[in-house]
Length: 309
Image 1 (cartoon, rainbow, N blue to C red):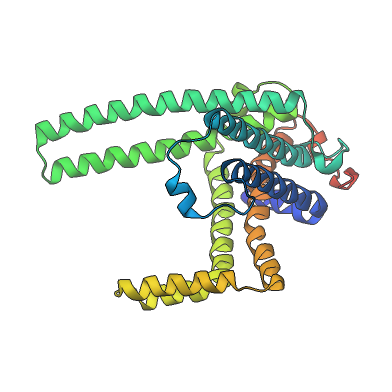
Image 2 (image 1 turned 90 degrees about the vertical axis):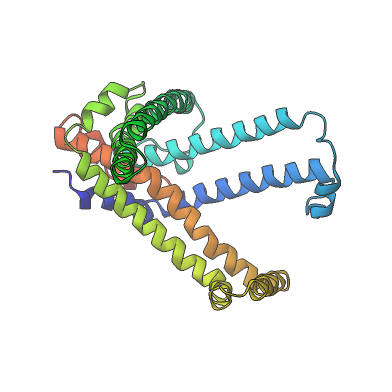
């Protein structure tokens, strides 16, 4: 039976069963991001390292074709994110499909990209309409009840209902993405049905992973910038002291040795690696556990050791 523990455990299982794939995903994401970032910097400034803030401030006009190139860069990063997300889904739901770190670029990725775009457009329109409705209701309440305690309570209740509704909808819709990859077709209705009556179980599993990522981020941030945060806290009532602390930290970063930079980069990469694997991983794990619970298909329970990386 699917449980919070089995769902979360399935996500963390990626690190045990597919460590090579996790490292490949992180490396691909890092290298692609660096390539696009350095490419854009070189195109804008003529140097890979950048020309300093003065150059950007002195530039009056953007280079010709700036916005089309930016759109292409964003589209490339979006497609890369889709490929990596599908790779995680495939590693959990279709481990028998051999391949390099479960990475592919084909019909599944195009289908997933289309689903993400459709959800983004529909979500944007839906949020806009809901916010308009809440604004109308809030204005009406303030007009009738005034700006006193009653109006404030009603406005807070509306905001809370809106916030909770967004969380509920996000959790309920989360399964449509891995299920679309698993079945090889758009599975919005099937994903919605699969999560029926499982909201709290899914919410708890997602929350556990989110709290882990936040805790990891805090630990890594403190390991990298702990002295900076401590200095900023000590000078919290002294603007000049805070500015001095920031300058000292920047100077230490610039004077850092190569081994220290490597260690810092590795520590910083831990967050990206964990986020890449656990974010899509916990959603795919939830889909896998619920499919097994329903007895709909036994293939998700296949041994992960069949995968090459």
